[in-house]
Image 1 (spheres, helix red, strand yellow):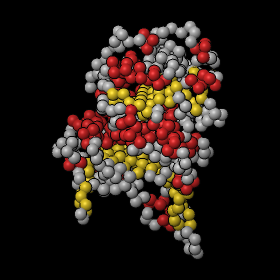
Image 2 (cartoon, helix red, strand yellow):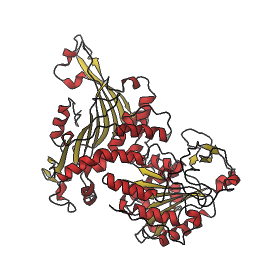
Image 3 (cartoon, helix red, strand yellow):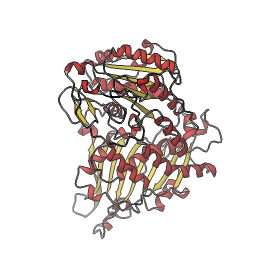
Image 4 (tube, helix red, strand yellow):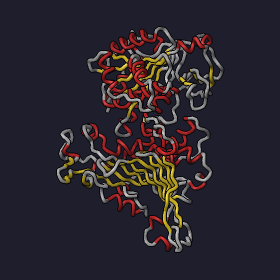
Length: 581
């Protein structure tokens, strides 16, 4: 996929050449909104802008002595430490946040992005001076956008009495601008409308690209040249897919970095915003009982399972171009694996965590064809109910070999994980919907009670399960004696059921990640070298699968998937945790 890069037109504003106004030059001053009333680390109620300059700055000194053409390219190597500085109440009241949802009429924007923004608004996590613009090619006015948004809004965080009032306040901050994704002229008109709403205040702008990847670079070019913030930061959230292989991903990254710095790009993987994934690091690094066990000495295998109980359902054209490996494995599950397996980071700083994840990805053994099983769901009928097969989708070719199921074993060549199989399983149209991490520990050496378990080898090991969804939970399977006069052993669960322990509804993943992007928190977003390492692992395998035209094993809609996954697991002496586990 070749990407043509075009410079900004000559008429573009000179002050926008860095995409961050000269008050906040990219890679020098990374401003971050922090809602102190609900901050993860602060309690006082006020908004704060963080600066990565070495010295505390005030609003006046920011404007003095800065050139208009500070380009933040890769040749800027100086690392800065973030310091806080505070505005007066008047200055804070004048600050504005503008969020531009590009592709506003699409499914993702309607179902996820706008509802997540509304939830943040209800929680008072967004500044008072908030402007939300939908941008898209569809002809629509402000009222039509609001009618579209309101159909998907609910007061899901809590049942507030003032829900309708909050909803009206939110909708009054939502506007629409129609335009082409590649038109600088249309983005200039958007900029004019934004400035009108911002009313001369200090304003930061966040662009959410809910559009196909083939227009990412065009949107970024137009936003950089015509609609970047004059006095504040400008950031861009990019939705997957991030290419189809190493080459196309590299071209996309190069295209984005032609107009943006790495610190302005937020590659979103919404599964990393799930509550249980956030808790993974807490569980491991904040509980003494687990960290000593987190190695090849005690862990026999790790399983990362992602299954959906529905098929492509209208996404056939997109899915057939990517398949389950690119759609789920290469980004979602591999990122979770890296978080699970990484060494202890120097700190919880985003760069320290992402550095450790990259080390894991670069330590992984190259994938071989014998390490993977692929499948494709076929039609199934039960009584009067019929379920279509993958190729029954009108948008999918009848002879398509695109896998809707894949299982693969991964190995990490380092001292901690040498020889431990990581079984990764992802599939559509399976028996149940679930996402979980299962850690199966080794057998107890010389276990005195081994014979008490009979032939059920599964009960001979302990297992730690982190269930991401549905019904978020963490539970540890342990052995215990069944009450009675005899000696009979059973396996029970020590569990943390989130629904019972924390009755309040858990925030949506998009809600967390949007707030992180606004605050400039990058821990859960993917850095470019992480992306390169992930594609380097999968690209040779994908190329071999496609060149050899490997035929996927068929499995019925609603089943447990191809039988081959059990053979793959057995080859590495892994008990695959199917839906009955």
